[in-house]
Length: 108
Image (cartoon, rainbow, N blue to C red; front, top):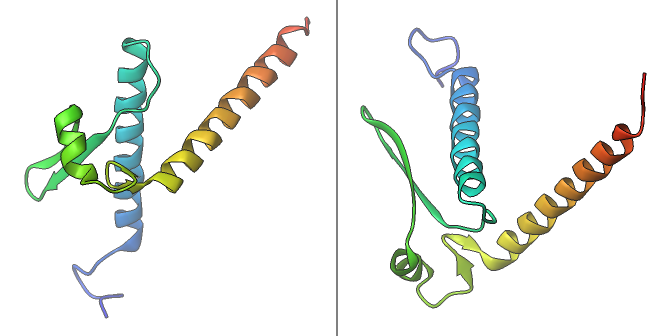
């Protein structure tokens, strides 16, 4: 409906924005987990307010409980999804460690 219209929605602009948001969140969460020497298992709340921008903050225990509401969830994510992403993340870390170890033996 908006393709080719002046001032219309451009999917490339939206995808670029989405990529920047995900990168921003990834950087914040990993930086915080590294600086505090802990696993990245915290729950975060992300807010977007048009005209103001994006904000992200880690939830405390009471806030997490308010979101969980007795369901099998981690934040707003279903437990099964959270567990799968944690397994995938650990697998990637193990592969990166193995790759780094295998490269360290080579000398030029």
